[in-house]
Length: 388
Image (cartoon, rainbow, N blue to C red):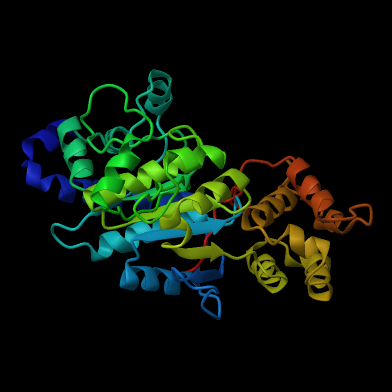
């Protein structure tokens, strides 16, 4: 593939990357779904600056249409682990690629690479260099092409909020040597530019000095270590987005991670200037519908479904409100023995000794799970998405 890249003119780098991303994300979606229909999840969209989300909650197709129509500079996707954030991120990338015109930026879902730990040890953690390395590692893009795309702001990064911890602020992907922490923020403040952005699960945009975020001294007083913490990394990411004029970014944020929450709260561009999409927990009626439609022996699950109907806010409903956990329960209690019978019965979930959500979750987590086969459920988190 590298040889093909080298034969292309430099101006075609974005188009070729878009094709590679499209192929990769289609495969990723197939793997996540495992050949099954995604769950019918609900989402709460809150526009930047709004106090309350739009009502009623949206389905996946409405979220994709709204994002494609609004194109917010920053989109923050929040939810618990296993809630379906990753599949939504994949679907957002695919929708942007479907609508991409010649010369448009390329949406890319990026993750931390092994090279990042080496860069951390060497003190070379600037945002642009990290992004270029990630593009090169994921898509085998030649170094010059990757650096040009990053430098010219021709990417829409999709990152997890945790991925940017430790990033610092240089905007030149070809810069040699370590970048002093905070340098990117100072340069961005002087220019007053603001990058647009968000990231795939685990990364966050860098802070916005021009929008009134605290200078390095005040950050230190508030417990934010420039260049070292998640907040400083997010600030550096935001500074990069501003400096290159990136058209947008998506950040995947674990709603239960206090450090990530503090980082988002410390960066005004993400705290106040980002649209937010929250992945809502499954309701008891949603979990019941999924069980009735996707288990091999619905009668075996009748008591569980009846319990969900009788106590939609009870501990069982709470435990099964997480898509990945619901899938894990289905896989565990639909597993077969060597002789073909079921290994366990779902009525174990109704044991009176399980006195709360944590106890039920512990039971599900402790269940041995057989390999998938005919009639078996998909791996946990595989279909924790939503129907479009």
